[in-house]
Length: 433
Image (cartoon, rainbow, N blue to C red):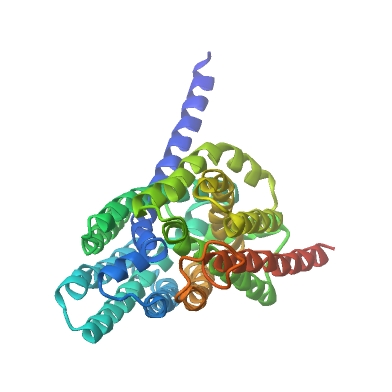
């Protein structure tokens, strides 16, 4: 082998190593964020029950308030990050928002374990959840801007897979540890773990030296223009509104499943929280690893909108199977399809909007996409609480209310998502013609 060929190979390997390290640096914060997401979406009701809040509607109000604050914080954080990006780096904005958020998260054990008066406890939990989620939303928006700023079009799918894989690893650790703490009746420790995970990962992401120099304004404008020409589409405002609607519908449907899956197994089939978590979320995480490479190969060949339509169909089928399952053992087979749907959804939630964000408004538009999704979740939470109130143990769809009806609604909403996706695809074809 000639010296020239060897040098060329080493240069390519060096670049590959650099981009993988960058994926990991960006993914670190997602690892910590998934500890909070797990508490919010997977085990929130169980945590609140130990705090003396047993009404499904009250639990839904608490979670809804937190998610609204998260959405508002993401919008504000995105606008602020874009307007101040010449004075403060994305990393600095990320770290500052996380530090303030963790002050309130670390205070939650006082409200859940020390305060005895029920109404005061409820009000204090609401205040701390709202403030904690608002400021973590402010931190999340500049983090989202890393995707269009640091990765080119060909790297975005790989980045999304890597970042979501790291996040899924964090969610798996959180699910098992939180379930054990719930079974041991000491769930207040969960908030300390969440705060520590968020703070440490935000710090690591912020202080890690970028592997790739961030492009100056002229370079960024040139690259975005080239990518837009290659993509054949500059989304009009009407198309972005449809994308915001897609994000909202995806979030509404997946939120019903994420917040209800473990609790539905414990209520419908009388298994422990740990058993339900291992057989659903943890097993699903194992299937995600198994499906990682074939999913990557599939998504790199699929056009983003077509892939999003496929994702909606697969996830809807997953929800329908959760609706009709008759015994606990069904979950071992259903979660395979759930893993496929979840990894596709995780990829396209990042890559679909990140591919066409306007130059200079990366955090704003991606923050809006995430905020629209966050705003749908409180609505889903309230509706879920109404459907479940007093009927949590209903096993089949023949009984009105309960989790089978929650999952049926999730399937219907996911299928409706296909409509705006088709409209965006039609607009794109007309523009190309």
